[in-house]
Length: 88
Image (cartoon, rainbow, N blue to C red; front, side, top):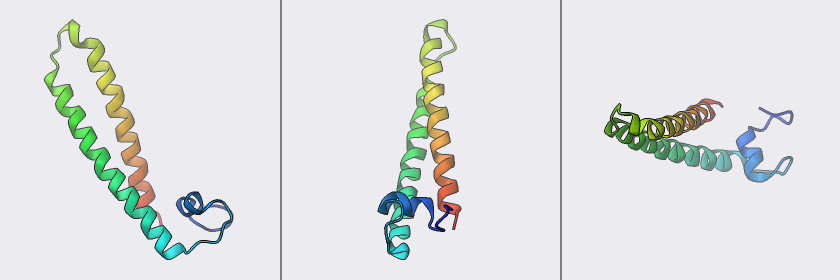
């Protein structure tokens, strides 16, 4: 929550301090966050499949590191979206 007691997501959509219809706007923001989270989970699964296809051979080391970094970033995004959706 921000100082003006509107959820941050609503402020981002409407602009700080702008009057908003918090009911429908908040619902739309949460719906978009839920969709983004679902897409993020699909991306994470694709990255897992990619990681599983790589061998432990030295020639795959750099690619394994890159895929791992992407997985870490996607997981962080999913975590933040889950927290945003849970907050009231």
